[in-house]
Structures are given as C-alpha cells and as structure tokens.
Length: 272
DNA sequence: ATGTCCTCTCTTAGAGGA
Image 1 (cartoon, rainbow, N blue to C red):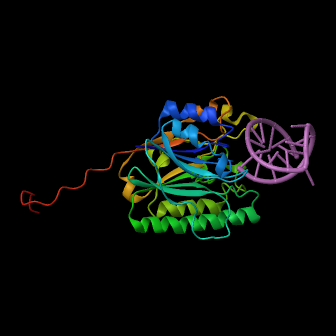
Image 2 (tube, rainbow, N blue to C red; image 1 turned 90 degrees about the horizontal axis):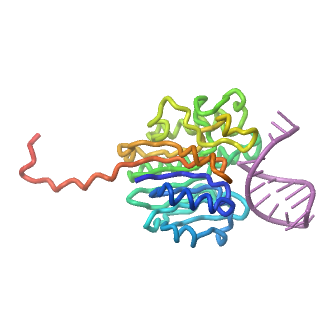
Image 3 (cartoon, helix red, strand yellow; image 1 turned 90 degrees about the vertical axis):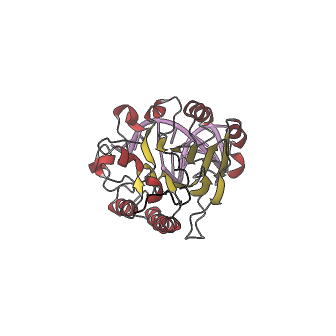
C-alpha cells in the first residue's frame, strides 16, 4: 500500500495537473494540504470520477485538508486536532483507511518568528504531540502525514545558515519534531534514505527548483506498530517540474500488506 | 529587500499568505 502526502497549493488551481498525477501514479491513499477552497468548492465529483473515495475539511482562502482512498471510502474519525476549541483553521483530518489510521495534517507556517503566528505554531505542535501520544496508546497502526512546516535537521535544507531564524527551522520546532521520533514515531523518508537530502519543497522564487535549493518539510511518520511494515519511502520530485506545479512535491511511503492474522494455537505447534 | 504564485476584494491592483 502506498500512502502519499501532497501540499497541492490550491486544489482548484491545480486540478488538471493533480488529476493527471493521480491517474499516472495511482496511489492508494493521498493526504492533501492547502486545498485553498471552501467546503462546497472542493472538486469532489472529479476526484470520485477518478476512482477515489474522499473526505475533506475545507476553508475559505487558506488551509484545507483531504484524505483520498482508491476504490474505497475513508472512514472519518475526526476533522479537528483536539486541544483548542478556539482554533478555526482547517488543518487536520483523520480517517480509517485500508486497515490503518491516517492523520493528515497541515502545520502552521509560523513566520514571522517571533510573534503571534509563531506562538500559534508552537501551541499547535504541542497539541500534535499530545494527540500523537493518544494514538500511540491506542496501539493502532497510524501514519501521521502532511506538511509539517518543520525542517528536522541541517541536512534537510540546502543552506542551513540562511534559515536559523526562520519559523520552519527554529530550534523550538526542531525539538518538537525530535520529540515525536524519540517517542517511537518513524520518519519514513529519512529512515529509508539516511544519506540523501530528499527535499520535498522548492519555493517559487529565484529558480529554487532548478538550483535544487530545497527543504524537506513534508513527512510521513509511522507509529511503531506500523513501522515494521515500512518497505521504502521517497519523493516524486519530478512532479515539481511539471507545468503549473505546486511548490511541494508528492512524498510517499510504501507499506507491506498487513500480515495475515495469526493462526489459532494448536497442539501441533512446537513447544517452547 | 527581493523574487513567485495563489486567493480575495472596498476587483482588473493591491494586500496577505506562503
């Protein structure tokens, strides 16, 4: 099973491009961020016609997240990250898909830092840490996929010294991300490729993609119970070079099929 | 400071966000 996270930077501005990608790559599960569409302007029919079930949480102008599932209907669990009833941004949706729990997230950018937007980002990270802990307690196989707006290490940015004061790279957010991996969440792209930069984002300025001036900010974190099924992970970076591309590239993880249920204990089993 | 692409509006230019 292949799970992809993709910040599309407007689903409607990107629709022909996105549908082409969907049919050529045929992913099993897709987490989308930055729909930039209100709930009733999401192109549901086009996506269903492409063969995908979908749940989404839209918002006017900004944010917006969706989970797509090939030939199946995602079973929505929640569409809000717990912990702040005042938070009106559409940045989280969670569903049961293909036997796993998929959390699709769009973390706040947080710039400029310091400032209220950065404070909001730190609060959001704390809520994510709390919810991730709950998910671990549940024991369910979980992938937390999305645009984290976090550059985890110096290795994940083309020129670290230029980014030290940026909200994507400030030490507070790197530490919060590291807390997730310390608690057992597996950064699937980095785990699969320890020695490659694996950028997922190149901004539209100054030919960043052509110069490979990128960042790794889109992540697929696997719960310990799911990480045993990690086969490979990577970035469809060529998609960033397409006409009318998003500034992010789709980022994927391949998971082995769930093992068959253990057979019932029988007298023929070897003693131990 | 700038660059680019997207959305929205007190709209066809400018502001805000990323």
